[in-house]
Image (cartoon, rainbow over all chains, first blue to last red; front, side, top):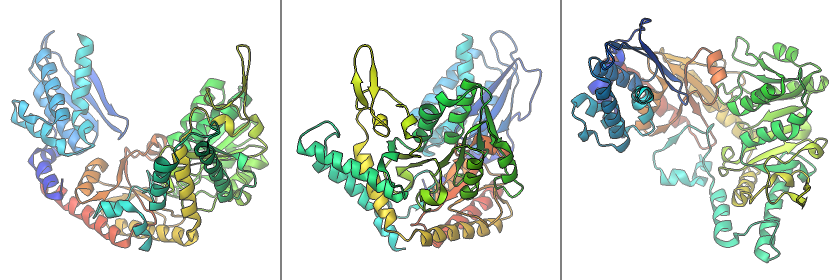
Length: 144
Length: 402
């Protein structure tokens, strides 16, 4: 990938979300607090989730430190989980992670998800994109 | 420069600006050839066969031991052991030499700038044996706080383990002085020479270290092979590190005895081609004017630091231009090191972003992660210009896009 492609990919969504991430704040009354941590690079986020009912997810916030890719993709995740059922969120996480790993963003329905899954061009950065998604998925699987 | 043409990677990766030499240096042509020659013409295992191919392999393997001894100014080749690398060399000392000598209340002294390889083996050993790990801090200039370091060493110190050159800060520790002080308190010293072996003369007579560890792949040699030097006074006390074939004297259902150091570390089938490649790397190093090359890379580092200092958003981990080696670490305010490394990669520049296996140091410096540029003998001033221009473009792009 050359500089032009880098700038194009970052300009589309990453920089905007990196600067103004969705719900970037800590909420201490969260029902669930998860730590998304990559020991190789030091990126660390706290995910704060409210659970509206046994089935559904409420408000989702996050804070912490990380690169633009992990921050933007966590921002997207926070926006997407709100109001969805646990099953829906789990299934979205699985699809997103699979799409990133296999480099097949076309399998995803939502445009913005496709965009992030298309970041497969960033060899060595896939863990950044998946970090919070994997953390949430691990939690949801454990809760089953 | 002329030396660059001796490294085939640059022939095959046109335009590559390789600035991650602290992680691994590139292979010199003679190393590649030596390994290829062994694999295609001389492949056999050592110490076991009576046939020509095996005895030739044994001879060449043991020749490298002598070569390394000569490289370190050591009179006795039997003080030199082959390991998988610096990390294993340090673990061998922790487990095979030190563990059985420790008692509760003893301590081990290290510094906060150590790589995890020279931190965690001592930390876990202390936890297991009821000992105290004492970690020397830095001074205000980002160098080792020598006064505090000296105060941490006492009559209960069983090991002092220090890096010669920090793999992040890039500063050269005054190991001669530190070793003398530790010895005055009766403590043996291990030097982690992973970052210094390529460019520094590590003559044991000059430094008087007790243990020295370095890796083949950071001195233009292959992966998976390293060196451990052990003071001849201690070699009789070294136990095997891993158990199996190749290190046995006698074994029966009731009893087992082992060969002496260093052969008690050659368990299983050793990395023979790696050792021969390491030998070729040592030959290469000994043919170089290393003092001149040391100056060459430290000049590149200084030039890089000066250029980075002129960028408002850049913050160097160590600002001083004194005591500089081949490593420069920094961060850019407002842009994460991984995003910078990806952008530089898009421009054909290979640098390292993250915590570089030094979490304690990054916590100490209150820096979540950093960007590291590390030079070697084949890098050029022009590559620094390209690096700096690329960083400036990124800052401009980042501001315009956000």
